[in-house]
Image (cartoon, rainbow, N blue to C red; front, side, top):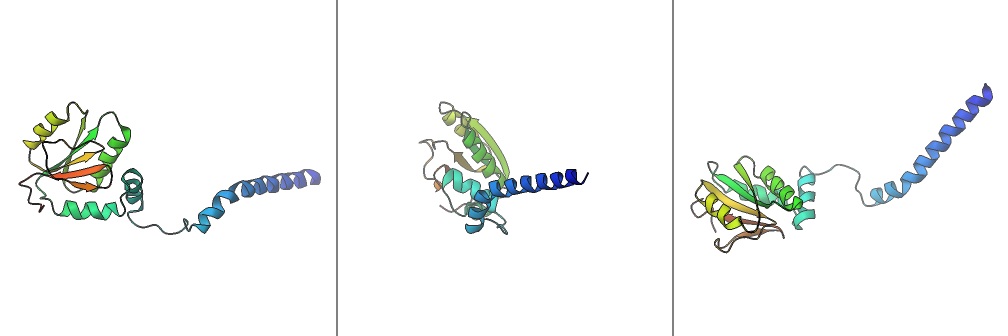
Length: 160
């Protein structure tokens, strides 16, 4: 009986040792890079935006932009229907556009112009193009990182 208890204790100590030995190569670099500890409030959305568009502090930038738009208008977000990262980016932009009313439109390159013309007739404050090339019919635009372009609708009240 005593031998069985010793064997049991040795087995669990060995398993714990293997767990520690396998985990140290991951834990030590994380501690050295200071990745353990409190995170900033916008850490997740800033990380997503940084990874997808190479924009730093994107959550604050979007917040400032959205605050300048009229609350009674809609923001239309165009995403590439054949590109999952584009759709994810569009959902992230929609999340950051709160409290405005948002409409996400999935487009293909050959239908983009028609969808933009259709959206122009609605009460839109502006258009976001997420991994979609802005049509030539819309001039100007504010580039937010490498994959997002915001184009205001002329009567939205946003200063160019």
